[in-house]
Image (cartoon, rainbow, N blue to C red; front, side, top):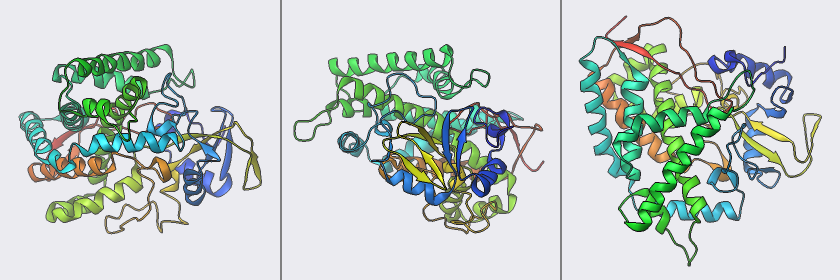
Length: 389
């Protein structure tokens, strides 16, 4: 049995023991099942993320890439094209101040909490985190609320993988194509009737006469939707799970809301939802007595780097006093997450309200099912009840 099988349900549920073995025994590991190298130590991952000339993103950043993305999004381009896309995307984002998201986040959180507190039990992902993140994202992008559940279903399918096929099946690809078609229609609608939302701002963003192409607008919008629906919702859910598993930390955050921000940073280090992203080698690279050849795929295991004892003392301890400088929860280098500020603010705002109204909560089922993904780690559901278990 290989030390790290990307398509193993055990890795979805708990990759950290396998990461530890990779870091100590196989820091530059060739995976036969995934046909790529896996880098697991913090310094190696950080250097690779900075070295875009060797570790290129133009072949896509998802381990099992989706059609049409490579070369059309921030995460799937290198400089100078990446810098152009990032500048235009930031120009669009600047039209919507991050601070303006606090009020709608609180509104969505209170509405979700009113509904879930009316029930004896609730499911955190469906009843809270997804309602907040999808609702916020749809407001930001000017998308119709009636499509919430359909879009969420398509995104989860699109980022999932099939264990037996060891990759994506037609169902996953069709879900992404349907999402892209939906967003292409929304972009076309903005061309006819401009609106004050992020999709329109992306379509109108201009620097010295340069604008995004239609494909870039659609794929960039799709990436934002996937990040908001999957990554942000998943991180909020994992953060709630961390607070459940470490009650002393939860009590400290409830007692002092100022501890929310450092607790979020520690969760980004300890248990980020963005576990692994891909690069393709543009030249031969030798590392730990292994030669990775030009054209080889390489997985940067951010989730492993964040548990590397060489960077973070006692890395398997969840410590909200840690202040983990340089964690890889939002990536590193040129591809550091553009939406990191929004993700932090949304999580802090929503979870502050959640803990104000539900300071104690407990899981009501034994095990947790985890989504099947070669890139991300997220619980399918978190069945909970208010109060001490």
